[in-house]
Amino acid sequence: MKETKVKFPKFLLTEYPFDGNFFTNKDGHKLHYVDEGKGDVVLMLHGNPTWSFYYRNLIKYMHGDFRCIALDHLGCGLSDKPQDYNYCLENHINNARCLIENLNFGKFHLVLHDWGCAIGMALAEMWPECIESITIMNGAAFLSNEIPKRINFCRTSWLAKFLVLRLNLFAIGSSYMAVNYPMSKEIRSGYLYPYNSKANRIATLRFVQDIPMDSGHRSWNTLKKIGQNLGLLRKKKALILWSQKDFCFTESFLKVWIDSFDDAHVIKLNDCGHYVLEDSKALGMTAIRNFLLSTKKQNALSYC
Image (tube, rainbow, N blue to C red):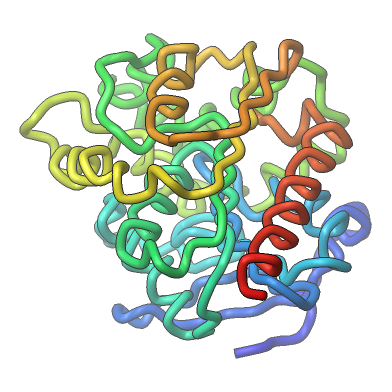
């Protein structure tokens, strides 16, 4: 369902000049997504505490060659933010699946970051025959016993509800700690725009709480299954665009990703933080576009 342009503040319109598109999930909640360009479909999935704004420059850079679709997970960006929803990994996967089924676009490329990696790889394992390529930026789709103390604090501390919901600590803190090069005031405001009240920050808190660190956690088995099934995608064309100055997803995560594909193209970004596309700018966008164009060309030749 296509809707009119969302009314943004002037500064945000320049950075995020996209129409608003919405669909309704099985629970009756509306989710927002960007849908720009024509051609082979590229589905972009963000993490926490970002939204489709993270992909804004990549969309503008690639929409002449590809149909770029970027989802706002429920509770994030311009999607609904229900207060009593079960914000767990399985439900985020089901919501993204609902988008794919609603748009019915057949084969597609995946571009994934942070939580988007787990959500996207679960989708790829559902429909491996539909996946043309996978681009991975700092994130995980498998269990790990590594977690930074500052994130674990937000995940487990009784103060987290106050700090994350009342003070927006996680989103504001990430806008400083997740980059190596400081954001401008305008770009930071863009990232924080959807999270301007306690109610609008509910998914930011729930995403952190949904990190499974023990077998009794509600999302443990979901993430375990995704990790166990990565072998279904071993032969897929893959680009791993990895920031080396990420305080959260370290070299050990990168090693698992490299071992998960037969022939992944790996680009290490030595001076970038967790928000890969913010720090790498043209370098990261060019790498992704060139990878997708080369994949598109190879696929066309294989069909001849």
